[in-house]
Length: 271
Image 1 (spheres, helix red, strand yellow):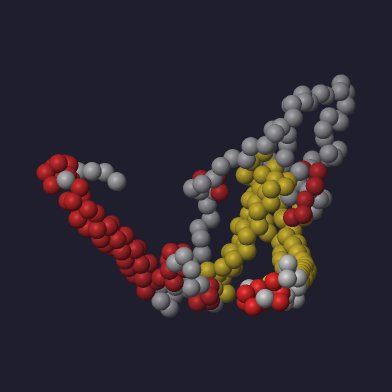
Image 2: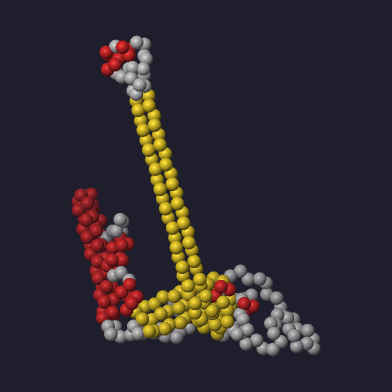
């Protein structure tokens, strides 16, 4: 918190009592400022949504992925560069994958098809049981003849259960996880970067609009040229650092999401 000149003058003139009185006022101002910012953001969002009533969701423009905010070139450990050698009077060169020209993606801007095939299943079950029973007793049947004395009997001498304790504890816990996810589709991706070792960084984005709902599919990762098949396709399972996102936006997605106020309350409430 930044102290102003008026705060310093008030502190020197009135002492700590003035600071205690100004403390709640500062907190009220801070809460009012936060409420004003949240209200302004909510008003902007409300106005934007009201302007789209009855209109279909707009598709994103086709743009260069490398110019988007937050884009960072991929950096990975690379082996030493091996010089290409040509044999005299030979049509074959070192590192060539075919005798004729290879039509598969290999250069910056080339396009290949990513076959997305994600099948994820998990079935976990765990059960824990624990029980414990304790029974303790303490008696004093004989103590120097005091068991026949009225005073001794008043203190419990001569009894078989002067002290008795019992305890029982048990717990039973059962947990299970069942999950099944399947995504199967094809996405055309462009080569956005060629790494020094020849691996290709690819990224593809697909948008499909059906009525008032837009489905988005984003695929990105690192591909080896050797894993690209002869029909210029590559399986998503062979992509390193794969990033696959499947979602949507529109009326259905908007209804499924809680309101902004509820999301803020869920974050702020400690219970």
